[in-house]
Image 1 (tube, rainbow, N blue to C red):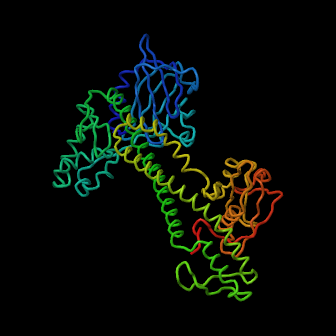
Image 2: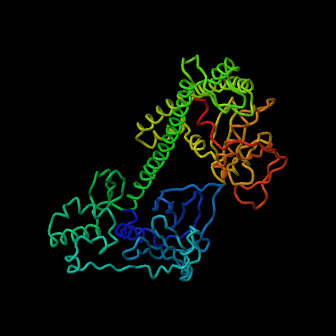
Length: 522
């Protein structure tokens, strides 16, 4: 209820008795979304801190304040030297204002994420704290009072619509009525309950810090789990704000961190299962070398120009149909398969190593998530974040590309047009190899260079297949893919996202597919 009309009414009354005769000596901001006012009267000083973030808006009244020498901006120069005449609350509204000498008025508009502080000079809005809320320059603080009269006859006809009949109440008073059994009594009794509650709201005996429905709140009514009790609104706010912001920090950062780690864990588990599926294919498929051995053992039994042939598979003691190329001799086919078998063994070793790393990552993230779920306080969460640096995890999640690995080489594939720009311009070295489907929109693909090494042909082919697969030529039977070192790729000024100029390119013709979904034969 720290923004509720009934609370602001009591706060304005307190500030009015406190601040009359004080003069503004400082108005500045040194933290984003925080305005500081320093007021003085003789030897006494009084500070107002207006906190207006996108998720929280309130006031706080520090007993002292030391202004930083740097990153501090002066605000509201027309207010300096002006004396407080009175503090008034708008009727039935979440705002109040301070009237100063020389027709200066400072309006505190506490409208959730549209909160602002507005300076009026001679009844005209002149300066805003949050300049992005430019429409606030059209406000007239004299016209912001609202009138809500609760008539008994109207109420008795629709007691269930109390929220609409008296919208200034807010959530906590309605929950208070429900806790008192409001929904179980007659309309006449409901009317009496509302009148009794309004008397308390208008003259609260105490101000309560409560936990209600797992939320920390400031209340004028005793309900929920009462944590602390105060006798005046200023002291109550000073106790409420730091505790609320601490809990807000916990709720916001706990949820964000939990989502980050859960997303990482889900991604790691998905990749681990994909690797297991590939290894399963290896175990149950027919290695290239075995197929080559069968062909070599039956060279004299294979008719020239055959597209396929049924041969005896002595490894598995069964007949097997083997696909061939009509333009290629059986011996040449066997040589090609032996070469693939050599690369296949390298891929298998790398795949097994990757599976081990990914399994370790899954275990680490699972332990991390279990540890996070045991965190209960903001202090514990800060220690957790400091130790485990989830900021790094967030960076990894937000990378603009997908990563594939083959024969020790990393292949990066842009996620979308804007991500293509980031990949090519920020995550790529000049000697990396850059690929893209020719003449159609598609993902930028990069093979990370390894100094002194030539990129193996299977890696080149796989990267080109990815470029074709993640392009508008995805459904074509064959796709031309251009490639060139990254140093020959540049972006023209003002070009659309993902659009680049390519020089000295070569072309590779491949079948569009993701080879990492089907790494093995069989």
